Amino acid sequence: MVERVSALPDGPLDVTWLAAGTPRLPLGRIRLSWEQASLAGWDVTAHLGLATTEVHLASWPAAPDDWPRLVRPTIHEVLGLCAALAVATAALDLSNRLAQV
Image 1 (spheres, helix red, strand yellow):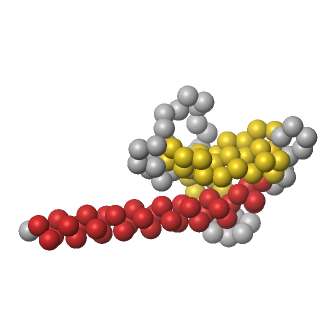
Image 2 (cartoon, helix red, strand yellow; image 1 turned 90 degrees about the vertical axis):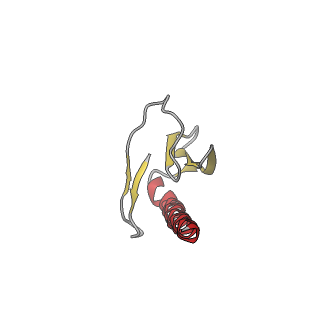
């Protein structure tokens, strides 16, 4: 599971290893999986946890050995979007509670 993604182009992509049978991802979390491609490189897949399901986010078939550099921009943007949506949702919930007072 992706823990942190640097905003720097060559920055780190920190992940936590998950067991194969791990339950569904929490809201806004991304799981990366990678396995060696049949000819060269790596087949990389990303899944995103939503409120009620987990969805396929992206695939990078036969990505080169430096695949973290390739997937980092997409993962960074999606995590930023999820964070922004969480803030907007919290603000809307607070606004609704204040309107009821």
